[in-house]
Image 1 (cartoon, one colour):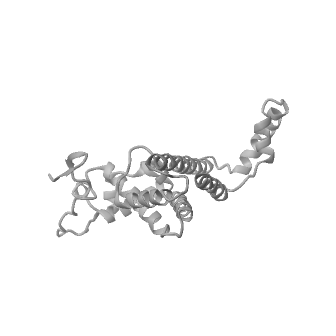
Image 2 (tube, rainbow, N blue to C red):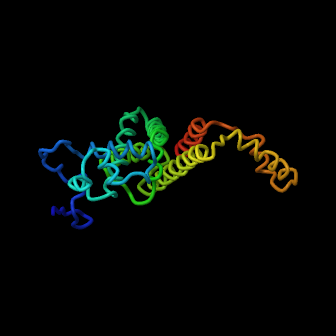
Image 3 (tube, rainbow, N blue to C red):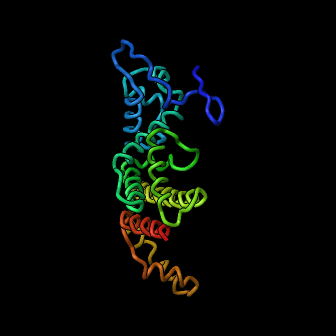
Length: 241
């Protein structure tokens, strides 16, 4: 096995550092890129729970054991899949003039990726994923935020990144959950409102929930894209001070 000394200790080389196996004579050539593409295709169609080594091998027309020449297991496969989506985000979020435009572009590119690949939200949060494109997006985000007027040091930057990431993860998971619920129940938002509207009117008539009633009656009811744009802009404006 290969090992690498790092400031964090010695450990095995990751999937990002291990070279691809040498090509061998076989009816179906393999690569990590081909395996990742097949896995993403499966996840896009059926969700992340449908992804397995056996199913991907079947999709590629090879035996499952051949995949283990390229990846150690499903955990590395998920890392590769997430990093492929971050590659899309990085490509969409080309360098922008000014930190504010850069942060907003990355945020919108992240939402676009989550809408395109709903399973991606299932991989957000939790343990860090450290692929090269993931790190590149993280670097671009942190570098942009470090230029904000109110970010004066590492502690400020950590707090600001935490707020932005919490917003992105929470908002995108909520939006994707709503999409899934709508498909599963065949009930869109307007139908849900019609079903629950009378109950809310009766509840509001009691006078116990005046602030919630005001939000429902007078608040802006935007589509998810417009709501995301408004809220992420508000966060960036707050960071700007």
